[in-house]
Length: 372
Image (cartoon, rainbow, N blue to C red; front, side):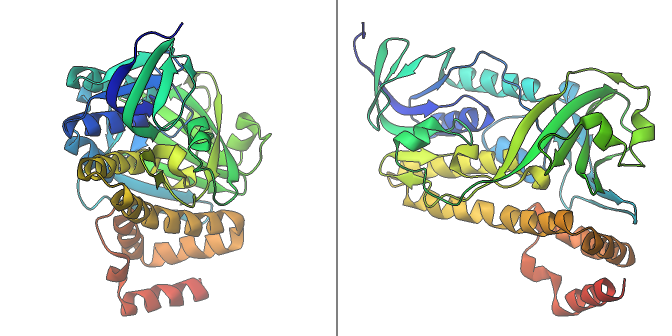
């Protein structure tokens, strides 16, 4: 039996990092907020577990500081290939590695203390753009935010599911009891795909494989990364292998009327960019501003701007993934002009404009690429 109707300003479907960040942002904007999720805390997910500096900046705008006791800093990105390696520091600040359940607990705690109503293990029924039932309790709301992931059911209900067909790769993640050997997030490349090494504590690392091969075996793929396999040989595995789908999808619209999409529910870029969380946190900030103004059209434009560079970078890196000979040429060109890699990383993290490369520098890199 449905109980008496309750009223909330913002109703968010999905209590992962994107939904919790959206809830925090909306609460800071003065709205009453309810977040519902069918899962129980904490929610885990197979991912690289690194947050880039632009994502940390967005979290700070939400008043969130990740505790040093459960994070591991990294200063930049290193690419490793059979042709060699190249690395660069972030232009401003460090990134942080953090276990996904730990991040979820931290965000949920901030949301709870901010006054966001959190409903875990929620049985959601009769969802519309104005009304929903949660565990038999009826809710009405002004704004509906869909944050329930790339296969979002609430997005379909809202009629916002139109867009490009998803292009999929497959991710697998495991943790090892190993002290991080590098101050970088390392991205190892081979014909099998990429393996990401992210420090998540003083004595543990996250190893994530992203590949086009759905039935790839993690242990077999590891042997195709000659610089990495010996480092992990004999190390203790601290978590079971977990898998997920990495999708690239662009939606026709991310808002309609009183409904908005955030996080993977709003479209996604391949996990090769490492920007998924950073994009979601920036979207949360932009969405709260749009709701405060009473018009979600500004969120549509902000969403496009947030995704522009990650989509471009994903396209470039996926082209390298699909063309090994081109990748080897690019790596040799990076080795000849490491400052170009530094500039590319600065663009990737929002610290420089794509136009800042300059004609002379671009021509020099192009020459190295042709003659590598």
